[in-house]
Length: 145
Image (cartoon, rainbow, N blue to C red; front, side):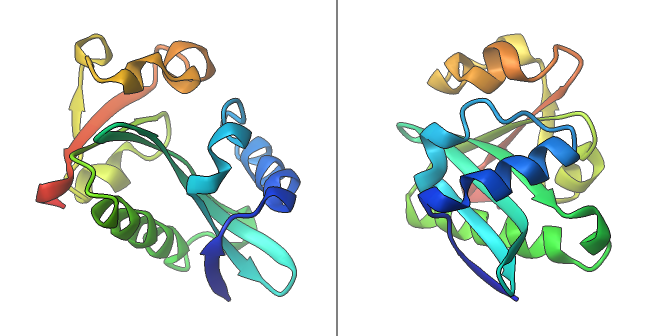
């Protein structure tokens, strides 16, 4: 298994993983240059990405293939994207989730009211239309990660 930067030809496999996990695909293609994939052989079994808006970013599309869950691969993906956020000198990470609030809370993310997000992140496709209003909105200052 290895983690590497996503490439354009990875999009179909990433989209299939996201769709299988009932996660939004909208906006992924446009931000693929800030995605990482977890590869086993020639199969992508995990992915995670950032949508960067100035000093802020939306952490999105963290997914592990169903048959590979529970092996710590989500943690590996999270640490990879967090390292990238720090290298990019980002200030704030935001995310929307319906299923992983507890995971991200353990990482220091705090649930916030979606309407209070004033960052350009709030204008992303995921914020505006791809994620339902019921999704938890969470925030983490990168300096606290």
